[in-house]
Image (cartoon, rainbow, N blue to C red; front, side):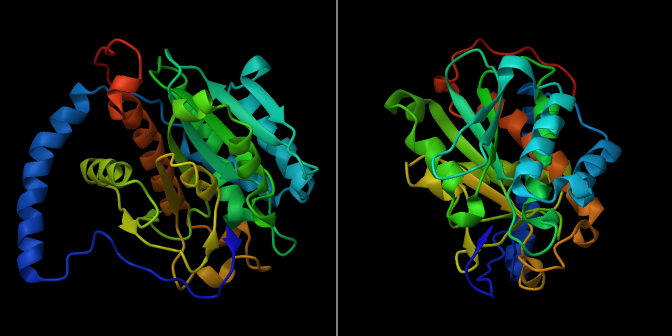
Length: 312
């Protein structure tokens, strides 16, 4: 995360603050589960979970001395994609103007041109290992590809490791600016991952597309996974900005709180700061969310016949 200030402006989007509101929420919760869980099954949310040990092993790569520089982190991310099955013509490096390190792009083809971008920057500042900011996000990209790749997809998914986010969103800005008008139109959503695992999963609600937030809120309830709204306008910026500027619906997932913010861009940013239970729960939610978007998001733009129901 491109950090600006030392304190975060936060809001808990899903918090109920009165007894009346809590009672109403419980009633709505029961009605929602009665409707949503059968609906979820009928809409074929299909993905193959990656084991927790694999997720943790990929996160630990940042502690390896071979992944200290941004060039080495880019090479490690590419290796993880190959390990996850994304290789040959599906995996490319995109040279970025004004950067010595390229973007890494892994494509999971769908049945049409409609596209969902899943992004995370892999670069870090000089202080610390950059495990939180943002190897925690970048190292999940190959696992999310692996989770979705076993089933046919309506949308084409682009899993992108962005370079030089810390220098001003350089990689994501370049990616968006070089798109043709049609390619911009084809991108139906952008899901950004930045600084995960410090706490339960957070969403930057004030920046996010409301429909994208509503879908993940419902999914988290159905999966019994924690989810909170935490706005971070005063903290800094992240790669979703490049897509929001082009009016592409976007959503940011993070784990920053007022208590954990001081870890970023310091020597304390290392893998030991990441809470592995919360980190794996975030991965599970994200994998299910991407599969859910594939079956529900902007259905008219995803040119494919309905997928048959199948178990996860």
